[in-house]
Image 1 (cartoon, rainbow, N blue to C red):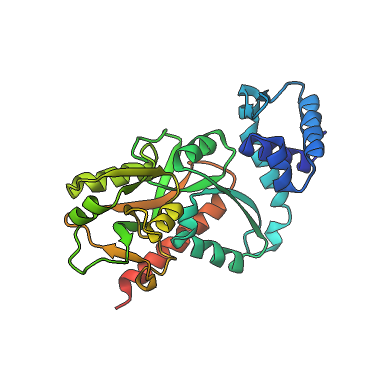
Image 2: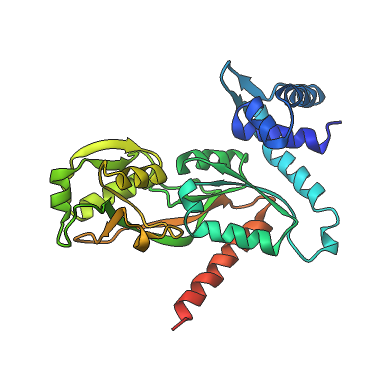
Length: 298
C-alpha cells in the first residue's frame, strides 16, 4: 500500500500540475516523483491525471481522492498531538504575494514563533486561481481579496483585514497641489489586470472618484506596479500594503483620492469543512484579537 510520502507527492502534483515542480517542493528528483505517482495509480488501479506535454490536471478520479488523502495525512500528522499543547503538521496555503507584504506576513511570522512544529507551505498566485484549488482540495485555504462574485455554498470567506486603495505616482517634479487630473495629462496609468479580483477594485475606485485616465500598461503584480511607478513610468491605484514604508519612500507620492475611499478586503478562503480547520481557526483568531486591540487602544 502507498506510503504517506507517496500521498504527499500526489497532493503536490495536484497543486502544481507538474511532476517537476512538485518534485522541487518535496525534495525529490522528477523521476522519483513520477515513479511515486505511478505507484499510487497502480495501487488504486486508475489514472488520476489527464496528461499533456506541458501540464497534468486532476481527472474525476483524482479530484475524488484529494480530500480523503488530505484526511489520511492529517490523521497521520496528528499522531501524538494529544501529548502536545501546540499546533503541528502541515497546512498548504495559497497567498497573494501582496498579502505577504501586507498584514498577513506578520501573522505568518507570529504563527511560526508560537507553533514551531507547524509547517506552512505557501503557494503564490491569483485569487481566482486559488478559488478553484480550494474547491478541489489541493489547497487547504487561501489568503485572497473578497470575491466580486457569489461563492459556492460549501466555500466560505472570512474577512481578516482591510487596505485602502490609494493613488501612487512618482515623487519627482510633483508640486503639493498636483491633482489626479494633472497626472492623467502627463503619465500613463499602470493598471492592475482587469479580470482579477483586485482589478475589479481598481475599476470601482476609478468610477467612484470619476477619474479620467490614459491607459498604459496592465500588470498582475502590485509589487511590479509600485516599482515601475518609482521609476517614473506611470501612476497607479493600488492597495496600501501594511509592510511598505510608504511615508519614508522618497520615490513615491501617495495622494488622497478626491472622492470615496474604496477598501480592499483581505480574508481567508476555505471549505466549510476540512482537515486543517484547527490551523485556520488560529489564523482567524489572531486577526480578531489584533483588530480588537487596535479598536480598544486609545
